[in-house]
Image 1 (cartoon, rainbow, N blue to C red):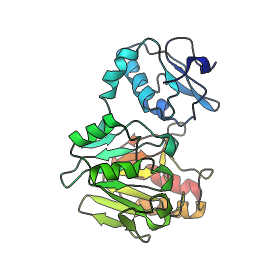
Image 2: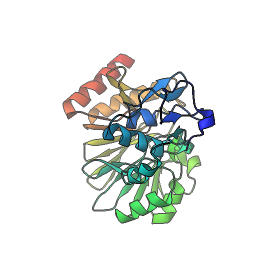
Image 3: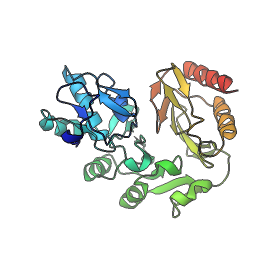
Length: 287
């Protein structure tokens, strides 16, 4: 938990605060937008929780913060209850894990409960409480890694559950003993419900995962931008090839989905036609 001595002056007065160890990863603003905002290079508390919903959101943010930069003085007893919220259900057996890892610069990770075996998409912190939660949900069969930046504690989870890690050949330096390697740029199906789609650009072997033509786990390839009211992708944080990333974005127009679930950036749920239109607008804008 945060250090009161390092409390940022940009916080509004009151119980919850952010300290100077914050890395501005956006996790807290995603989970509790009514409480946290971006101020320069940090997040800060701009509104103290005033009702149970805002309090629960702030406590979730405290737990999910990768650097432990959020503190509270008056609500420590309620933290145990908030722990029960993770993994946090989204829809149809898909969960946001919380407990974002500093090893992936606070990237989000997800869990899919499936009758043929559960999937972990990228990795949260390896914590006993979370391990037991995953165990109670049936463990995991696969650990899908979008790219090298967000592997975090994937190896520990794979060993704990005897899971198969999936990563592209061009990202293999991040998991050299991974069990399943994607070799080229053609989509690879895992059963009827899961499709790994290579999307080189952000990194050379970046991949996304499409689940049931409804959920698209996008790593650092694509996200939602609330400030612009549409999809976003970053030239500034493109480590391999911006031209390839633009081509990869255009290829996603061949697919349909209604949930956009990124590693970094905002999650979004829209009807499929609206999501496709938003992607088309982004692709056109980038041309």
